[in-house]
Length: 434
Image (cartoon, rainbow, N blue to C red; front, side, top):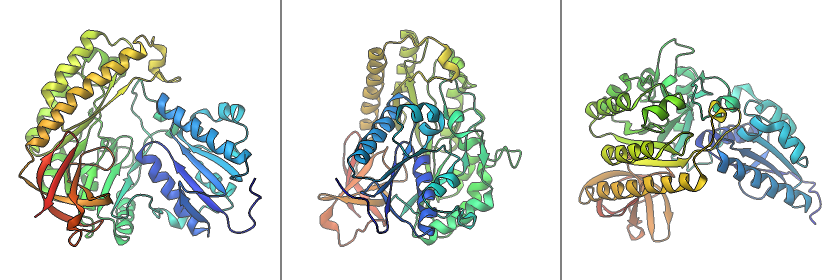
């Protein structure tokens, strides 16, 4: 058993879940570093902070398993303290304190000053916008708002992160400048809902206004948009995407389903017809736009007819990128009042069928890229390849471009290069330097 250390203790931050959690962990890291603390990300340390996810069943289980793993390490003397923060902790703190009492303390998503105090640090207001990046240094997430005011029946985010709160444009521009000064070339804008941005502080949807200011930050070359809610979609951003070369021709718009019956029960504020009309308008306005979406299979009341409608729609829409998930019955949500009547095996089978269709679509779309040239941002070196992305691809979830590492005289991580595609698979492209 390891004895307690007497020197400077490392604080290991373990991040689970989405990019918003990555952002929060980076802010925590920046505050700790400013307090003279030694911080590592998912490496060995005497003190562990677990930033949890509580969105759906699988994510919650991963968070619980991770907490138990580090509690076990604490019992064996491998770590000295374990703290838990994030969405799971915000949502289930009383239950967690009862069921896993060996955690030193639990904190919610709004408890950063309290968490810092427990770690022997002070919250420094002058550091707002400062972060210790855990992503590669050439790209970073920029969270433009916190919380959500949408009434989606299946979602517990408002329970964990509260109501929507936009960050003022001038503050976000300042943060972008700080990131650019550190070498960041790509900003990935995130929020629970980008399209709601500005309604609380400017009394209008102000995403287009924000984009027009962010493109003025000289060192930033790409700006990517994640999580655009379809209802109330601010169409003025399409003109900005089309006219501003820095803004990637890419949007992530989670549509969740297409059956009007299911969309109504989900409280999404739209219909099959309205969704198709919006997609048509988006594609007409920006013909070269890459659209990523996410869908849910097995929502309460989803019949075979509803599912077949979604399958046919996926075939017809031919999304560039698509993710699909089995419905998770979450307590305290509106949908929890409904009967979770689609068997788990049926949910998983439906997910598999949707992803099989999308795999074929992705393969066909990628074949069209052979012989074409793309600007590629290099993310890393892996084995015999440098691995990068086009403007149509977001980190971790989308296609990657692989370039033979024997060209390393011309390639370095964080650099933009021009690549001609020579071969294409379902989710990978292979190319050579131009």
